[in-house]
Length: 383
Image (cartoon, rainbow, N blue to C red; front, side):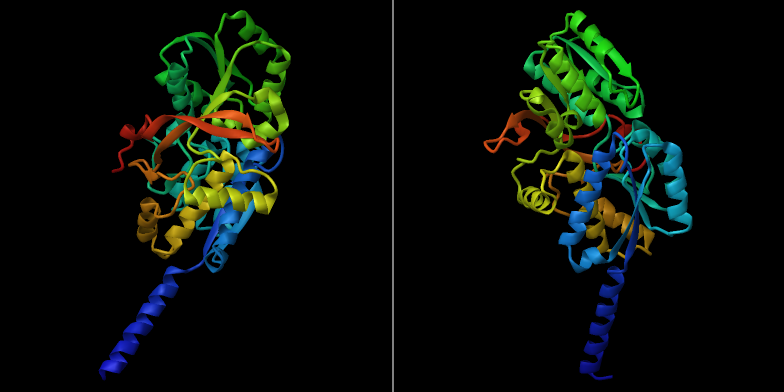
């Protein structure tokens, strides 16, 4: 065999290997697209799809099947079974609410499917229940609330009233807040998930002697609470995680949220090139500013695209290593996975402000944590 023939054969083999790495992947997105939490699922979906569109031919290699879980765990389980058994998806993603994630994820990963969470991060899946096939691309549920508790100390709050819905993420949220907050609690309440009338809770807050209020009430719950709290003229500063003062909420509540402090791992004004490009592209594509949920959906798709460029989905171990490497330019800037495959990342304090064009959004006013590791990572046996 001549040197030229040998070179040609080697080049041909390299091209074949390159083609194999670009093998198509099928992704099943189970998310909330109807009811009070629909805006959250829509933002995750839209951020994910924007990343695929921007990726061109590489994005075209990702087949996306999207279904509405209707915010019901039993529907989520049915959809996951269908996607795994009939659609033969390689990866599952999309779930917003932790009670649905806890119903779906353990069974899915046991069947050898990767689950990449663009939102829900229950403590049960971060510690002893961690799994090599489970990656959280967003946060662990406690994180934004831990950051709020830490920043409440910076703000000098001494007697705060805290409330959240009575479901896994709600419990994680208040536990996270209390883990770092050093003051007293004027009260602690768990509301019904999906509740929209908070007259009794607001009356209790006003009578408690609190100097401030911290709440985690996702989607429509938060919209209702902020409006009712403002109308009640409680005279207390509001504080919450980024979810409670995100773009899906701010457009609906308007000036009632101005001045509120919230904490998140991302903000539309975060100063890095990936984020500047994302915000501009999202606003151009959809006619609205992106939310935290949209940023998480976008990064989840970017993670998949980075793994696609490095490994064939048919090689499970290689694809796992490519996911774990997180070799993509996150809109958050600093981002890497810890031993439990949850992010190690910064958390910022944001203030709700009105731009010169009248759009209400957030701007960063401080940093609560740098390279924060969740509280459950030490319980995870993975290294």
